[in-house]
Length: 219
Image (cartoon, rainbow, N blue to C red; front, top):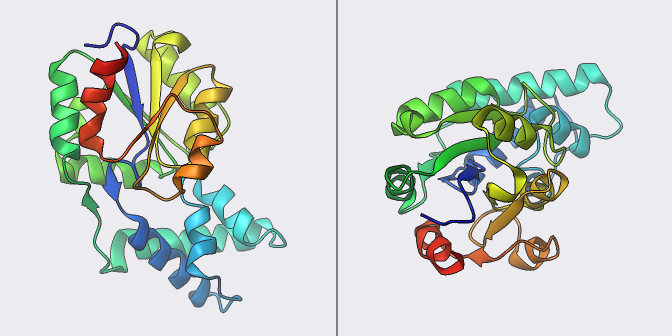
């Protein structure tokens, strides 16, 4: 176990689960439902990682609260009930989480997903028992505000210098920075590596299976 870190906090979408296509498809379907001006897939990719309300506000900054609420409701409906676009764990993710738990790390999730969505995937993947605490964007501030990470550190008794945030977006990197914690980027998710490195993470790994060797290397 790495002597520097006791708490490992994971983003979910784009870090542990390959859900990018599902999220984009559902956002575009929600926009279509409301007959709004369509967005291209790159515009939608850019908001993955934010809380749902914040994401819709970025896509439609001119929209009022009623529009944002309607878009969010249509998105949830598509994501939870109607889409046929699959979401699967990245190769090695399940094994990595189980191994890290066996090594004695405290594990947590900080995600832009809503609570219902996170609980669903934790049950479907069988990983719920391995995480000591989780926070979602509908129960605290969205990334990159530090509150999500501060709450996790508080409930698990970990200091910022003992905490590592692992994620695929600049929102994850800035979340860690704003909470005075460390961050580690993954290159296979939503935001390109160059964009992530501008946020000055400790490093960048190419697969989630590389996390354990990386932790051993920096120990």
